[in-house]
Image 1 (cartoon, rainbow, N blue to C red):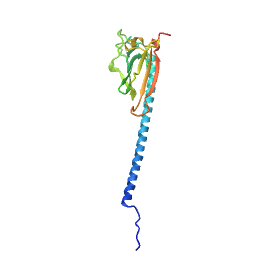
Image 2 (image 1 turned 180 degrees about the vertical axis):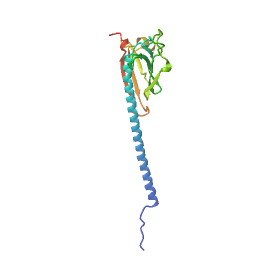
Image 3 (image 1 turned 135 degrees about the horizontal axis):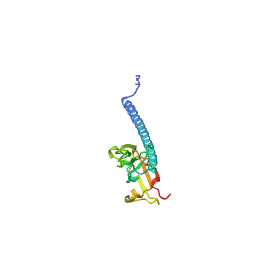
Length: 203
């Protein structure tokens, strides 16, 4: 008797083919998802570093040219580890602004306050009102340890908190950026130092 051979897949072969195809698609999908996440991380990290670099460059220029306030207040107002406030004509409009650089959560921010004059003919000093402060974000994904601001006197000695405001003539700045601290690479660190020209005594 002649036997008829059946062509095509058996049920088991079909199930195995579907299983292999499914696994292959899962592997490909996982690879594509990983690539997208990696590219997204690289883009966000690069953007954060670029923003931080611009912020530090601007901050150094402004601190270097700080001046006495329109109110007659001393050049420097606040000297904390994560906040520095000073006065300077940062927009070259012949008016001295109050400038505050500070960390708020994972954001590095800048606050600018224009002076308020009671009258051009008044003997009363100008005022810097807190409600007039305009705040902008300079950089995100900031790591807050160690301190961002460190303060030094004319001899290069680092100053403790009580003496900072009156004795600071030079500062060191350190800004660490990391979009995702749980994954490599480590923090990208921007460091700079600035001499406050109007406070320098050892010319």
